Each structure stands twice: as C-alpha cells, then as structure tokens.
Length: 239
Image (cartoon, rainbow, N blue to C red; front, side, top):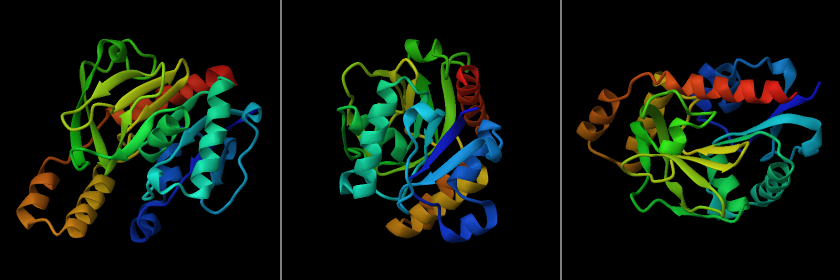
C-alpha cells in the first residue's frame, strides 16, 4: 500500500523540538496517521523524494526559510511538486509549503505587504471555501494559528481563493481539484503558537505589552485538526 509523504522543509526551534517534537510529528498527529504508514523526507538534508506515482498523498511542512531565497533543495522540491500536482496526487502545503506550491505552479511569492502575521487569526471562508471538501462545513469563519513573513502575492493560473484574513488575502487556496495550500498552521496548538509569538516578539524587539496582547488572544483552534483529518480521509480514499 502506498505511503503518505511528509516533505520536511525545515525544523521548529530546537528547544521546542526537544520538548514537543518537530513539524512532521505535529502534522502526523493532526492527520491521525501512523508514522509506520508515512515517509518523512528531509529535503533540507538532501534526502531523495520518491516518485509521485509511488505515494498516496503529500503534505509539505512549514519552514523558517524563505521561498525567495531560492535554495537548491527548495527549487528541486518545487519542480517535484509540479510533477505531483500534474499527476493528481493529493497535496497539502502548509505555510512555506503553501508558498512553495504556489511558486512552483506559476504564482508569485514575496514579503507580505502587511509585514506578515503571527498569532491566532480569524479566517473568513469564501463561498467556494464553504463548499470545499477540505474546508466545507466549518462555518463561514474559522480561527487558525499563523506565523509568516512572506505571502503568496499572485496566484498561479486556475487557483481559487478559499479563505482570507484581514492581513492575508490568500490564507487558503485550491491549486487544483486535489491540491490545497494554507498559509496558516493547522498542526499548531496553543502552546506551540505561544512559543512562536514569543520568538516573534524577541526577534522584533516589540514592546512587552504587544507580546502580551498577542498571547492573550492565543487560543486553541479546533478547526486545525479537522482540516488535517479531512486531508487524511482524502488520501486514504485514494490509496
């Protein structure tokens, strides 16, 4: 039986990873997918990606890197994703993965005009979003966790917006019938989001009150595991 591929494009903060695990662990937990039925490919470390026809689905993780840095591993992964999308393999890009997928399919990525987002944010679903297999049935608005400084500035041909927030017009996008990207992190929980808020505050030397305000609005986001669980169902149905 074909495996699910987790494409690891980076790692979380070392102290957090030691205590809570890394991106791939949170993704697999949210998917409800057994690690023995998945393959984790660390493309940053140079691990080889499998042939798209040998896997049942793909999740591309977040990263602290930037798509516009044009790292060799990132460019190669983008070309592979383009092949996988063309072959109809179910795809879900998360944050960096969302941006990389958009870039690979002909969109444009760059620094967020708003300066980016960090914290728990409200996403409003479009009419297509409320009817989408991945996002439909969650209501017209959902709370999600976000942490990004770059965004998808222009969508590739044929892409459809499924959700947007006040600062991010492309929070959720359908790149094809079985290819999705979300700028937010459905795998983050409240504790992880809190750690990213603290990192953001420290990195930008923001006032303590600003950090406290962000932490005060950080709450659990039940829609994240639902979205990951639905993607797992889509993958399992086609295995």
